[in-house]
Length: 130
Image 1 (spheres, rainbow, N blue to C red):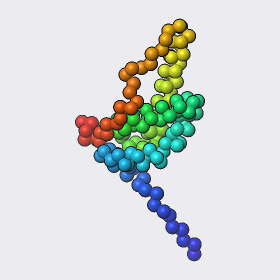
Image 2: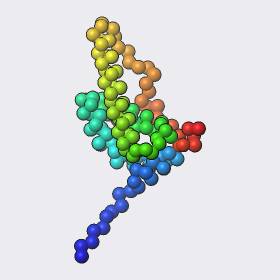
Image 3: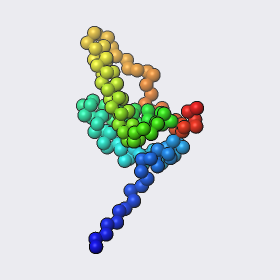
Image 4: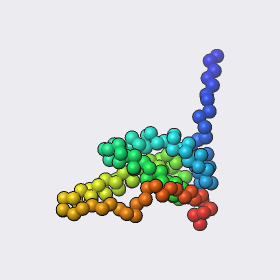
């Protein structure tokens, strides 16, 4: 009889979520490595530019990290992050449209000073959200 052996590919998303919610940065890195390629392609299809898609992906992971305590588990962690990428990409398009209309009106766009991409991530587990 043919027997197949499967190599362990690491913890599943549920285990990673548990670890991420408790501040495990290595679990977040594993989750990022596992899903970034697909999520980048989704962002790229929406915004149409690789540099903008990278910005969307980075902003999405920061948002996910900052709001991990709000994840209720009604869907998979990857599905939740997919939705964050979708919403972030759509917001990016709206900002781009606003920026283009500023240029069209003869005004100079100065950007959004409140947006700080490199600010990092504050991991807050369920107990910290209360």
